[in-house]
Image 1 (cartoon, one colour):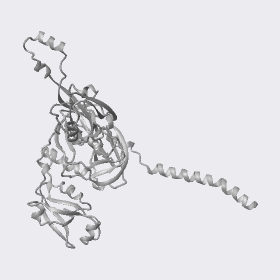
Image 2: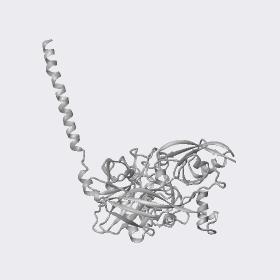
Image 3: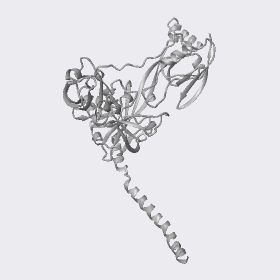
Image 4: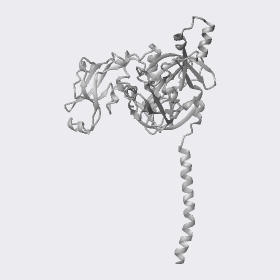
Length: 473
């Protein structure tokens, strides 16, 4: 018994010591393994910019008070009819904030298309507090990139890295202006590559880098750095149900950006090639049917008549495994790689057909995105305007943030103003019916009763509230 007790008295005091030593060693190793981004931020922060935009919006003013109307008549007898007074127009200005970064010493700035598209004024704030007016060199909606130019020289700038070399699990750092908090840094890792995000253009030429970096509204257009201080992505979108960061953000690969920048500097526009196939995923069932060793590639559902694919000899039910040396693992890889080449490019296509491999040569056509003009969202108008306001679809940033509904873009005298609604309020329900689009709103508004009270559910500054609209005959 004494030996046992002695053994216990000897061993037990040692265990906590061993645990403490072990934990201390583990903590020390962990601290050694974690990177510090301080030098990276210090070196690159001078090249990061904050972008402020202003949009002019024409809006009818409220009917002028009768006393003011009478005064105008007295001052300008016979020159101020009622129709002119009630039709006086005023110009409102709406601002937005995003991020960007300098890519050359002579003032070229890269940002997102959705940050500056439709802006009447673009102001760029440098890290050293200098302020410049910017001009747009070119916009590219399919890649969501925009190239701006400042009238300046000897500016700090960043270097691009190779986004193809990025690996899942790599550390990355974003610098931008989330919620207008300029020059904020946030770190994380690469979560995935080759992501395709729903809700993009019809011709989806993007393959995003997914990260868990805390990207929020205002980070759009800012750079994503690797540990070498090179830009390997441009922060573009988040996936969120609240409008804030949920640890899922998407960045445009730097290799795509360099191609877009080169074309925008050259011509102010981007030209993409077209293959001309409708495609789908190769799942396990199709792989088994067509006797493939594993699911991979892009399955050709249909070849468009008269397309470059048809001219090259591609057939329905072919499986495209490579495009011009780029491996096609998923069908979403194909349009991404096709979009990196200009019309007229001769490209090789490796296909799997009837159990055999074959290489074809295709001359790319011109993508419809090369000539499609940007169309402004249409305002839904009520014929009698019974509610006293008009609505429009949500902005791109609101849609990306996961918000659903419509926004108020014009507010006149009527039930809406009396209920306390404001311009830019987001309506998510009317008469207790969910609203997801201007068409939904018009349909529900058309079924409202002639009189009485109906509810309208709105979101204002991130907070939901319900108001009562009083309808009258």
